Image 1 (tube, one colour):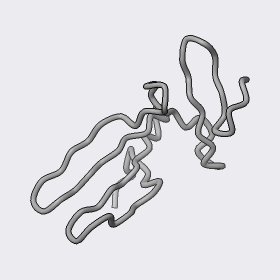
Image 2 (cartoon, helix red, strand yellow; image 1 turned 30 degrees about the horizontal axis):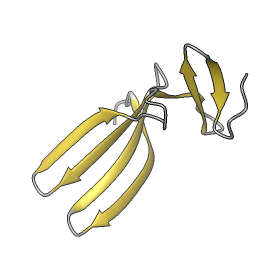
Image 3 (cartoon, one colour; image 1 turned 120 degrees about the vertical axis):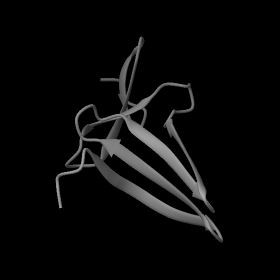
Image 4 (cartoon, rainbow, N blue to C red; image 1 turned 90 degrees about the vertical axis):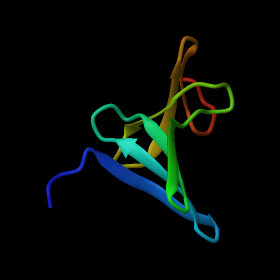
Length: 80
């Protein structure tokens, strides 16, 4: 199998026939939310509570960081 550009971070079955998946782009670190239901699916960048795109910088530790105009903070809210 060829190398994929995306890693599956999390997969959850939320209802019969409906699955949510969080994908991480290995090149950019951008997280995406994918929802599959029946024969349909949707994909969107994953946003934090402030509307900023979630970026995983350290893919080995699965630590999510949020980049925005006000700086970078870790998942626990500390500014870097």
